[in-house]
Length: 50
Image (cartoon, rainbow, N blue to C red; front, side):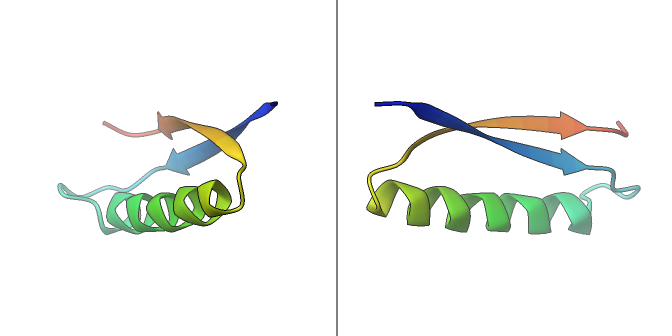
């Protein structure tokens, strides 16, 4: 089985970042939906700001 990679990019300014929180929720939902369909997925997170 082939594994797909989901790239998540976030560049929020505050701590905690609402952009990152949204990205985390979207990632969780997307990974869950893909795994229910039998799709293997890994997640790579890129933070543009620290």
